[in-house]
Length: 527
Image 1 (tube, rainbow, N blue to C red):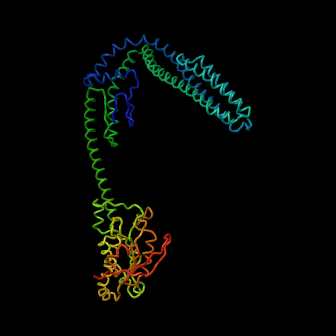
Image 2 (cartoon, rainbow, N blue to C red):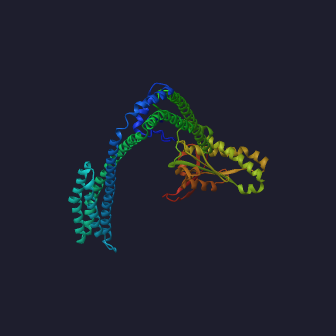
Image 3 (cartoon, rainbow, N blue to C red):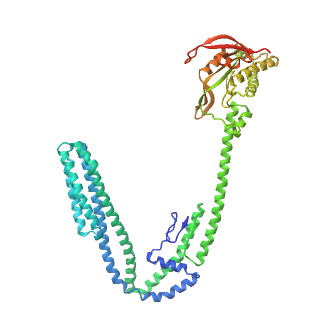
C-alpha cells in the first residue's frame, strides 16, 4: 500500500495531517529542501523576523470575511434543512395518498385532508427559502416551484377528484403512473439542492477555517506578533519533521502486522527522506520473500490436496476393481465416470450352499478364517476376469461386469469367472476338509439386462453398486442354484451359447417385463 503526502493510510494509528491546511504547501516545500534538519531549523528561526511584519494588516479584512461566511453558512444549512423537510413532506403526501386509496379513508382521521395540509407546509417552506436562498440556487428553486405548481399539484387534484368520485382503481393507477413518479422528480430536485448546499457549505467551511486561522494570527499580533509568528513557523518546521516520523511509525506497525506491501512516500530530501527510501527497499524485499513463500505454500497445498484426492479415489476404486485397473484409472490411462446411469450390464451372485450348518460345526475363529480364505480366492478370480466387486452380503458375493470399464463381452466374462470359481473350489476341497472338516460349495446366478449403476448412498457413505430387477433376479437364481450349479437368464445364454451347453429349467416373470424370462442351467461345452 502507498502512503502519499496528502493521504493517510487506512490503518494508520497517527494523524499526520497538517492541522493548518494552508501551511501544507510550506510544510512540503520545507520538507523538500535538500539540506540537513539542523540547517532547516536554523534558517527557520532567521526568517521569523521577516514574517512578523506581514501579519497585522490582514486582521480586519479577514474578520469581515468571517462574518459574511458565518451568515452564508447559516443560510446554506437552513436551506439544506428546509429542503430535507420538503422531501419529507413530498414523501408524506405519497404515503397519505397510498393509505387513502388502500384504506378508502376508513380511519378515525382521513388521509385526504392531511395531503392538503402537507402540501401547504411544502409551499410555505418553498416561499421561505426564496427569501434567503443562495442566488446560485434560484433557478433550481424555480424548477421545483414549476414542477410542484404545474404538474404535481394538478395530478394531485385529479387523483383526489377520482377518489372522491368513487373511481378508486383509476385514482390508484394515476397515482402510481404519474403522481408518484412526479414526486420522485421533486425529491430529485430537492436532493440536488441539498447536495449543492452541502458543497457550498464545505467550500465555505474550508474557506472559513483558513480565514479564521489568518484572523487568529492577525488579532494575536497586537498582543504578541513575534510570539505568534514564531509559533506559525515553528509549526511548519515541526510538521515537516513530525509527518515523516509518524508515517514511518505507522508503516512499521503495518509491517509488524504482516502488510509487507506497505510503502512510505514523503517529500523530505533530508535524513528522513533517506530513512523512508531504505524502509521501502526493506519492505520490497520482505514483500518479495513473503509472496514467494505464499506461492510455495499454495503449490504445496495444491499438491497435497491432489495427492489426497488421488489416494482417496484409488482407495475407493480398489474396493471394486483389481489394483492394476484402479491404478490405471487414477493415473489417467483409463478415463471413467462414477456417476449414476442406466446401462446394459451382467450381474453375478454366488452363494455358499449349507453355510448355516457349516457355521454350527465350526469354531468362530475357524469360520472367519475360512470365509476370509474363500473370499480372497474368489476376489482374485473376480479381478482376473475384470469384474467390479460390488459387495459381500454375508456369505454371498455380488459382482457386475461392463462398468466402470466398458466391456463388450461382459456376459462371457461373468460365465467364465463362474466356471473358474467352481474349478477353484474343487481344487480346494481337500485342503478345507483337512483343515476345517468342511467344504464350501456355491450356487451361482447370472443375469444380463438393464440396471442402474453408480455411486448410491448418503453424503457420508456411498457405494458403487447396481440396482434393478436384473440384480434381484440374479440373487434369486443364486439362492435357487444347487451346489456347483450355474443358472443364467436367456439374455446371458444368448451371449455365451457359443461355448456353453444350456438346459432350460424354469421361466420367471419380473415386474415391468411383459414376457416370462427363461432360466437355463449351463455347463462348459465339451471339446
